[in-house]
Length: 113
Length: 113
Image (cartoon, rainbow over all chains, first blue to last red; front, side, top):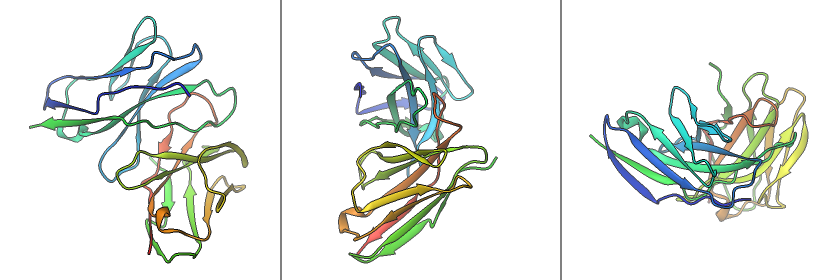
């Protein structure tokens, strides 16, 4: 599986935007970029995913570089509830198979009040 | 909205015993994934099922087996338990394989003593 690189931790202030970077220089043309987060003592939670174009949903935005070798998860206005470990995961196009996600180390996001 | 239901929430077993964990996916979801998360570690993919057939296999020990039933619920059977099997076990489900987000359950915490 193609590998992703994320900072170990980041810190931000409440009510400010947060930009979480992810490098995936070996991404292939059929890899989707998925983001999940895991709050303490909970199961991972789907945040957003995309292929080439930037994506927005009610939780976050995903900005994908033109060469697709990096992406940024954007939380527009962080709250204390956004404190979690954020995982950037490349998922090959399944072609019908239920492929498992490969979780890397993730970024531990700390939100200061 | 209905979520992924896992049971039991907590389980304590002795070494060499067996354990069975259950997962009930979101209604209409036909794909189930199992993950193991050791203390201080990231989730590791174990195995997945689509339409009651095994689809993908990760780092699942030979002592573990799993299946998906006709109602799409899944069970993870663990035999000859070892202390190192103590972990959180998450189940996730999705609507057919493909590039959809997965919904994770709250997990079963297995403690082997």
